[in-house]
Every structure is written in structure tokens, then in C-alpha cells.
Image: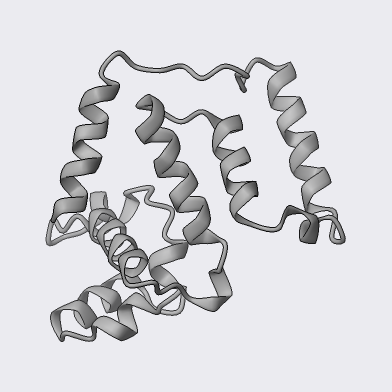
Amino acid sequence: MDYLPDVILRMVQLGMKDRVLNSNTIWVCASCETCTTRCPNEIDIAGVMDTLRHMALAEGKAAPAVKDIPKFHEAFLGSVKAGGRIHEIGMIASYMTKTNPLSKLGNGELIEQGKLGLDMFKHGKLSIRPHKIKQTKEIKKLFDKSKKK
């Protein structure tokens, strides 16, 4: 992170929009909600970070140091929109089509990720077929409604 979450919040208050939307922090936030849970002012920091990511994507901004994270974010949300929950294999396939997977061959990252995926599959932690929820229409409505704002 180039700025701590409390600094990002202060920058938002001060109207430093460009600096916030171009920061690495909003992209490397894992949205684990630990900071939200611990915030003494009861601020939904993870929600703010997610909103800032959406704003940055809408304005075509993403920190160069994390150029593939917005693509991962799009693949993640696309998976949720399609089935109401994450389908890891479909999400990774979508992510790979948005990035250059061959560039990861040189450092062994792609092979390591493949081994991890195979191991997860062998242990029943990864499903080939997506598990969809029954309310996919409602999920799509939520996504459509969020685009209108």
C-alpha cells in the first residue's frame, strides 16, 4: 500500500480524487473487512475501497504497479454476476483472457498456479461446474442498478 486506509479516507475528505484513484492502496486492499470491523468510527472502509475501485475503473485509472488487479476485479465480479457466487475456474479463465498468461511462464508463476489448482481439485476444493444460486436474475438487477449510479 502506498497509503494507509485512514490516509485514503482523509484524502477523500479533502477532495484529492485523482491521487486516491491513482493509488495502489485501493487495488491491494483484500476487502477482508478487518479494518471495517476494527474501525473506532464505524466506517465501512472495505466498502469505501470497493467504491473507489469502481470509480477508478469507470474513469480508466489503475496504478501501473498493479495493472492486472483491475482485470482480476472485473473477472471476479463477472463470475458473481453470472452465477451469484464465484466459480474459480471460470473466473481464472476470464482473467487469463484479459491478461497475458504467457508472460507468467518465464518466472514459473503460471505453472505454480496450475499445480495449486490441480491440488485443490484433487482435494474437492475446486469444482469444474459452477454452482449457481437460484436468484441470478436478482443479482443481475443489482449489478444493473449499481451501473446507473
